[in-house]
Image (cartoon, rainbow, N blue to C red):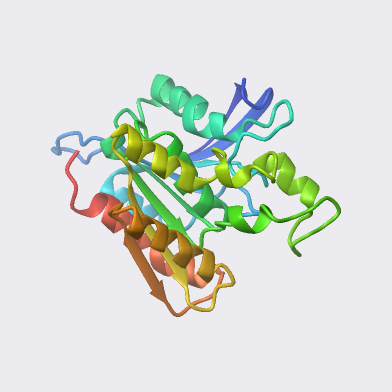
Length: 258
């Protein structure tokens, strides 16, 4: 196995950036080479790129793990110069991985998974770039578009202030109708007849983000978008995410052929 810290210059973020990557072992002697699939892992608010402790599963399924730094930007294209995090993740980083490592070449073998802010990022990125990401796993997703849409200058929701959310999501008065809203992306894909990514969502019943996750589940159901939605006992913490990450990896890669 190989653990890599990679640095390259990002045009989207206008600076050198780093990401972490795990590559599974080469085939053992006598084994035929197997195609390596790709899973992007997205951290949450206040987090950073790092391994999630599931390298053995990555070995089992022959999956490369790619872990970018989203900082606290919700994996969206912010309004300031050098804050194009959606473009970085969904396009620039993918192109770099394809050129340099031959990874993420086909949507059928490319998944994206995140927790909290990263859960939002996984859904948004897969819906914004459905030709690249065929599968999205979203745990305890921070689906807060409708909440922050009602913030006014000088206000805060207890996590961050109006100015922060405006930088990430753009004009908050228009955010519910903007590309920052995953619901808008779903409706656009359905109207165009393009394929949507497969979606697996989960949230703990004691999680403070339970209601927005239920709401998005209802939205997908109303739009007749096939998806998996799971609830079980748990909070907004590593215990819950440690339970569901293996389930999502099994769903993505356990029974699929390259």
